[in-house]
Length: 370
Image 1 (spheres, rainbow, N blue to C red):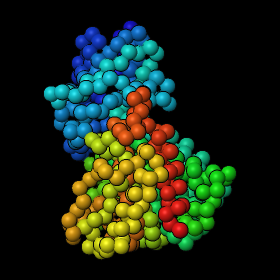
Image 2 (tube, rainbow, N blue to C red):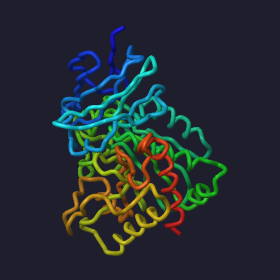
Image 3 (tube, rainbow, N blue to C red):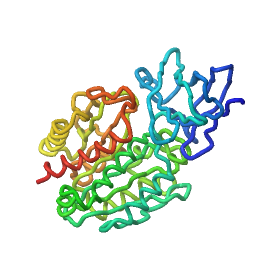
Image 4 (tube, one colour):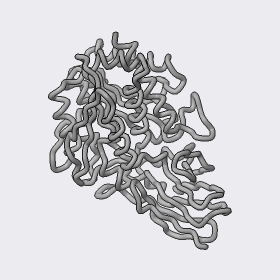
């Protein structure tokens, strides 16, 4: 029986170039109307008992090709457990090898979070006591921007994810956050919901998620460069969220992302915003230190360079929100590789660990904002 490779499904992305015996050459398809690409997700059928080598021959032109060294692809035979497989990168080609002992196998850049799972999450959380759901707006393809609110406290917390759709660990984080906040037997959420109102957008880019994009929406627009002037024509996803923020105000915000190169969890802040004060910046630094002290799955040594005074990019969410509202705002970056300070050789950074990191964020928030 011949091997069949298919990516024609929710969040799928791959193109078959050639197949010679057990070596298969592939290409990642670029985001629609964009040059960005790096996300891949495909299924293999008819390969039981064979050891296959996959070569992504256009990996050198990917958006963050410098992130391939040290990276390991993920494989699953049940779409639940995603294990790392032997992977290497040389001469612009990403190569990974796997022995397939099942009828079907799936491969992906990271454990996918499909729109079907998103819909299940929203339905499940919206049915919980004390949760309100609203369709905040629609994407360019007409998909819902789902918005969930919880709590009755006076301070406004915003948590939102997947502006960059290929960063699927972000919605695993949001699943963990929403599950913890709706756990009726947990004293920490009860305390938080009395002191805060939570505004949660689990997926800000459903079009890109479904299309198998890395970084952009249906128009090829990077949503995290639209926060200064979002429009209905280019970025309705940002427009509806920012408009709602203007209505509620924002005291604390976390914008959840994934980083292709850095093998660690870290937060980026808002240094360089026009409204910067040392006191405002000190709160961000103190929050990061408290999170690092609370778990070995977070650290503050590795991260992004900070912007010089007055040079922050206000088109980016965290800068815009910190400047616009005076909020304690942060961009969380989780790795496609692993959190090397506390590595897992079998699974790497994973959905389960992303969810636990969200639990930890809530615990730190509860203690920090007294």
